[in-house]
Image (cartoon, rainbow, N blue to C red):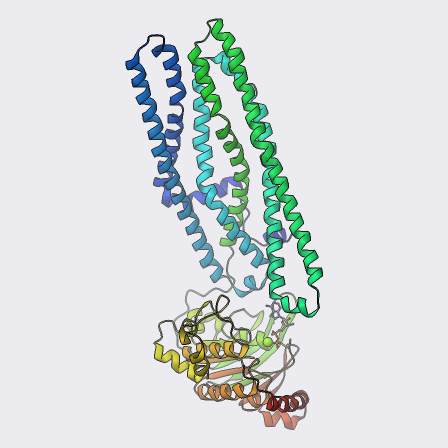
Length: 603
Ligand SMILES: Nc1ncnc2c1ncn2[C@@H]1O[C@H](COP(=O)(O)OP(=O)(O)O)[C@@H](O)[C@H]1O
Ligand SMILES: [Mg+2]
């Protein structure tokens, strides 16, 4: 359902033929030499597998009656050669076939990854796209097997089946017809079971994903679960999913248990015909004894390639679905695009909004926002949460495009800037800033890749982060982020600040960047901010009054509009919304200050 809704927005829908053409021309073509060599090897290997039954026939029909030991040795050597070659060829084709498949899926993954990075924020904001992204990545993991085993089944198994039937007809058309009489049943039986098997496998995957999500949720929310004493409830919910997962698996096991013996039995019916009716034909002198032995050999190796071929049909439809999703994602156009005629420029730091209207979805989040900020000025954005402060500052580095009006940097519309120039001159520190699973040094250096260690330390000092970093187990080499040491909110924010300081941007944006810092640390950060804001345009979104009152200009934002604008004194004199807000905030802060004097809030 959700997927369909999303698909409706996709620029393209493909038919199978287009998909094959697209896949071959983009990804298979560069690897075509190895790929086609592997297909030839599939055919050669199939041919070699057909040799031993023929040799047995010759041994029985020719060499043994003539008591010709020399001939037996010759036939023995031929069989030996066939087996040996087949082993060698199979090893080579398995290896190279998988290598090609890995290389193809690596290329696809790279393209997709780069493309996801280019896509606009609106794409990434959408929760459903996160799921779809992991679907496509999942798809790629499964495709990797199919890219090798699909052609293997189609070319190798088909060659083996056709070769077998061809030789059987050559030996005895009559016996062939009668011994293959059960093949249609075998086909239907394996088709039905494999289809069901794939459905249960899909179900298993779904249940596994649900279980995984639930587990992740539970572990992330363990504090809340414990605080509300809901362990029992969670246990029940988990065990319900666990049970469904088990049921799905048991169903799959059931089909598997039937599939192999069942198909073996149906195949054995053909072999029984050879034994019974074939024996009768030998007595009648219609065929030789060696022919039944050869037929026996052929039929024994008939079932597996047949199952593979049927299985490939199922795999093929999944492959088409996966490639379609893949290409659809790859062809999503980022709606934030750079104009080709944009010329490189240096940002000076003048920022102007002219009658900006903006919305994420249908609802307008910013309404007619206009203001101007001179280079090196510090602006505080103040207002209730949900007012649109964060949305305003996101428009400055053009993370989103406005609906109407314009955002100008140095008098030039952001749409006319080179995106790289723009973003290289702007640093943002957000409330919930993200640290990569990497060392502290790497995380700070992200602000300016290639920075010297001294510069990194200087930035950390400016952000008042140096001291606590030194005290970490491995200092600047300590691994942090999701898979590293857990840092407190205040520590994370100071590392983010250091990252921004290192970037030394013309425009600095601090969005509640000091919100999870205790008063003492905030004072330290405040010093640091004053130190670096002097040479750049700074936007500060903060709730603390000291931060706000220091700003040269205050924008009071409410429900998407700029309600009041001016210096702290001017706005206080006006006794309007800002004045109200200030008073309420002031009452709150007085009590917080009192508490923080009693408790050590070192974050
Ligand atoms: N990525 C988003 N997608 C959709 N709506 C959003 C998104 N981010 C914020 N909003 C909505 O936009 C409005 C303004 O939010 P925001 O700019 O974050 O306010 P503030 O920073 O002042 O708290 C809110 O109603 C919020 O729900
Ligand atoms: Mg915000």
